[in-house]
Length: 335
Image (cartoon, rainbow, N blue to C red; front, top):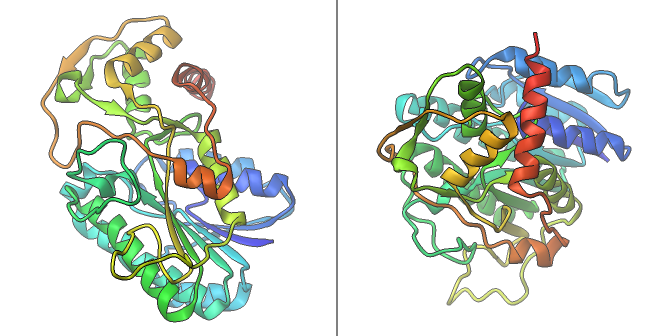
């Protein structure tokens, strides 16, 4: 297939590109290489993809309407994996306009490109953050997600609504994946694992929010990518049993689906830190702080729907995954 991957220089994007290229797909990678975090890391990710003869990179911002129109008209993609976004819950409190530009305007440009370009399936990144103030665990796609607690979460919920509209109006098959705390080699520097590892190795204290009383459904990158690719290959379909009198938020009479993609095994933050300490061989000095605005104390994915749809079943333990990350970090920053 000819596949467009937006956010190709990103953490998940690079890994998805590698898997699709390895199986023989033609991949066009798009990224604006912004400086939300060190662009050198993004450039080094791209350097791993550049040697593939079936890979092409285009530097482009998804918020650029005219350029996106030209791209879709020229390339005629068969499928799209939309991963480009302004990420980060905490940063959305500081710079909300960046999230509107990238996550709303950019997503609209992708939807329009898919609509007019005859794309057969759009898979896009949503987020576990859409569950916001929900406290029922595990988080289920069948539950309402109408109480976001950050602008980032609100934009991801908006993406799901926008996707449904295009599935309903134009028959565009769309599948949203609610990612749960993705980690692993080549990860983002603003994520806890990266921040903790760097601080411990440099002998600095780590900030532990909510006084350590946090749980996260940490999901290893290889498991995430397998789920993304399996989803890409299973085109969204209308649910023949959809009942408009009792509508299911995860289903529709349009070709629209939304799935959780997580490890289905939440880990306490202190246990996660202990796994990092063991992998490094050094204890962390901890600075305990209150819960931050926009954050939630726990996430826990019910992944039964994605398993039934694609056979997805994560298999990487946190200790193994953290060990892989620490080994990569030490190698990457050895100089």
